[in-house]
Amino acid sequence: MDFQEAVNYIENTGSSGIKPGTEVIKELLGRLGNPEKGLNVIHVAGTNGKGSVCTYLEYALLECGLKVGRYASPSVFRYLERIRLGGEDITESDYADAVSEVKAAAEGMEFKPTGFEAETAAALKYFADKKADVIIIECGMGGLEDATNVFDSPLACVITSVSMDHMAFLGDDPEKIAVNKAGITKKNTPVIISRMPRISCKGREYDPALILEREVGLRGGICIRADEDIIPAGFNNPLPGAYQKDNLNAALHVLQTVEERLREMFPDKKISHDIFIKGISKAAWPGRYERVCDDPVIIRDGAHNPAAALALKESLEGDERLPEDRRIHLIMGVFKDKDYMEILRIMLPLAISFTAIDLPDRKRGLPSDELVCAAGNVCEELGLTGKIRISKADGLYDALPAVSRSGKSGSDISENAGSAGKTCEIRDVYVVFGSLSLMQLFIS
Image 1: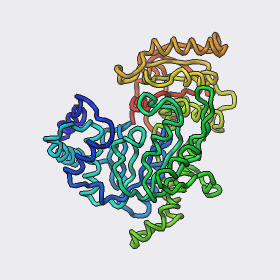
Image 2: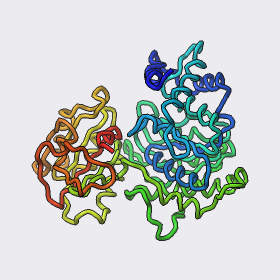
Image 3: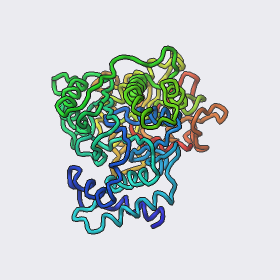
Image 4: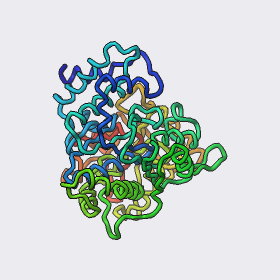
């Protein structure tokens, strides 16, 4: 099996249906010799912030000289970034080899694994074969029945901010979603709960962190609330965005929790708080309040649910690098199953213009015509009609103004940006958001 054959297998296996729960993935792992049993795992669940916390942890542990694996699917920029080892993406040949083993093991199973189950098994087999020291695993969705929930005794579990998303699968209120996320808890395992806001839903106010604390206790876990700020004074968070403070704080609580155990497991490595901080200072996580251009200012953020939109709004309002008299232009594409009306309610009051675009995945994406109508309805609801210019564009670069090549910052911007011939002033700020899949449209 070559790389493309492996990708085709992952994308097509299990297409006949999904069997809820972890029974299928556990059978598959058993056929592979249970590679998950010998892995030292930090397991991360949550609605928003999982990727950022995983990034902080990865860079911190790499700095200690540990062989660190990381698994998160789907990918955002590169297909192979979903499986990483030693700070590098898995190679095409290693990916093909791991998937080949999974395909062979799945032969004869009554229920074929889904793509996510098969790829999760391939990642765990790869990490076991490569003898990874520590692996950081990100839940795909939820926790209790997620295909990653197969570890008997992780080093630690982490639950980042919980909010309303994937309600069709996880439940229609914050309590049900939080209970599902807490399903990764294992007996006598530390579970670090990030600081997170309360949520109003259906006329009730919920405290997800309190719900998580209760559930962790019921499951026999050791609950650690990351309420205390342990970020070193004066530390410059390498990941921009106001919301990253809580993610960084949660990661530091995780590292503080596992530090002594890691020293016992790897006495030949340099494992200390200072080394963790040094590693974190090098962290990079594209697509999260990332300023990709300075002339004009273009910011991309994968915010795709109301909680993430609120965090994006707070970051824009508190960004001292932006002009005080900023004029914000929103460019948005979104999946049709997201709460895009609430996202619009949060973001539109900031803007002088709104441009709807189609996502690369036209099947799952909300058509731009419908997003334009939704924005118009929200403007009318909020009394913003006539104050915001609403339109649609054929693509991201038709929605952006001309870009100064010398003004680029971070990721490169395509040469065809600004094909619509827009002009802008220094106080114009363009914000591209609504889906992580939009981030792919920026050429790195």
